[in-house]
Amino acid sequence: MPRRPSGLHFSAPASWGGKLSWGPGFAGSGARPIRRVPIEAFSQRVTGISLTGGQAQSQVSAAGAATASIGPQGLGTVWYPAQATISTTTGAADLSTCQLFLGSAVPSNLVGQSYAGGGDTIALAVPSLSPGQLLIAVWSGGVSGDLATVNIVGTMDVLSW
Image (cartoon, rainbow, N blue to C red; front, side, top):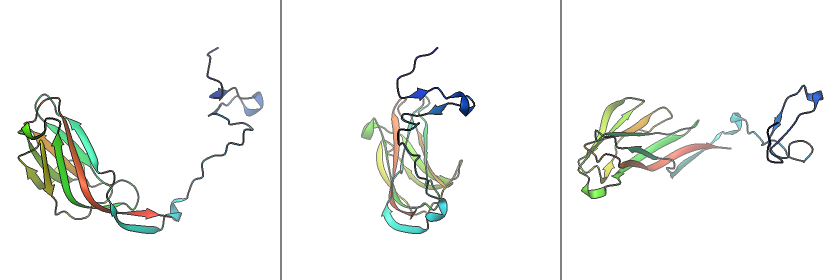
């Protein structure tokens, strides 16, 4: 019989049909399930807050290429990006090029480009982004093994309850 840390699992009584209950302190300990807020409760829109979650990274391949995608996630989330900050671990000595595209999964509309892919800021004049839309940063001519990073700065709208 396998050994388990105390409190992590317990054997279910035969009256439960042999089903296991997972988690510490389940039976008779006063533990309660986490409250689930119904999606209908999220009806208030909070606007103009600082954009969060707008960071993406990718490792530069042996061919010197990297691709990092980022976009809003969650029902009712809308991004209003103002700029993209790009960098690599080599920094200013990196002579790579970074192109910034607007698309859904495949880079389609070029919205910015930098010939200083190791560290630069690209101003963005793009429409608002909803879930499913992405900003895709594509580096070429980079240093193999570097970490390429894109950070989107702007504001966003979210739903609250």
